[in-house]
Length: 263
Picture (cartoon, helix red, strand yellow):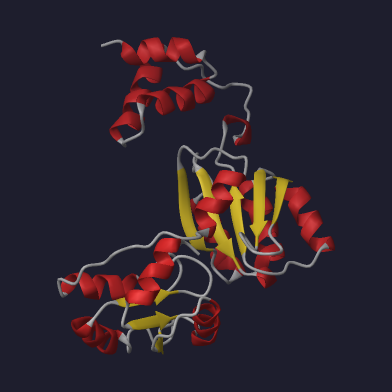
């Protein structure tokens, strides 16, 4: 809890909370007395008129159960509605499992893709993972404890035995990081029953993950230049594009950089 967040909670007229019980404990702990209204997944649309009406009279703070409102937590629809009514939206940064897990994972952080919670059904989850099979960036996903083992099985089956960091209960008393490959994570969480909130940080696809064939065609200079330019056209920096293509083509990075600089 930051000093800024406490100041805002003391100033607002109403607190909209994903779990009012937890919110009351929080406010009581810091000696704050404020009206609280529930705002969670199953009433977030019905509550919009009430909260918008409250915003006409004063400021409203939105807090979620454990995380950042609007990021896989209720808040998106309210932000959209507030902006549509020309009401100022002010984010108060706090704990976010996404960035916390990513920076401590030991996996590349320069580019990543966040996919939210993995699908609940096995067939849908595998299909979704298949759509990420060629993703070169680090992949971050949330998962419920009772589905962690099943999801790790599906990750192994679809993405292969990649490097992974499985983080749980981030910034809380029982915070834990498991770093290794997917098979080792499966074994670990088979022996240790998963508990708490989980974040999975999965390595992106590398050259080593791709099928190796004896008749692999070598990359000529023209193909290298074209590949670098295509990545840069997608918004990838020159340095990152050179690194990826050098790895992909099995070429020296400095050589690829010189080719990328040529006209």
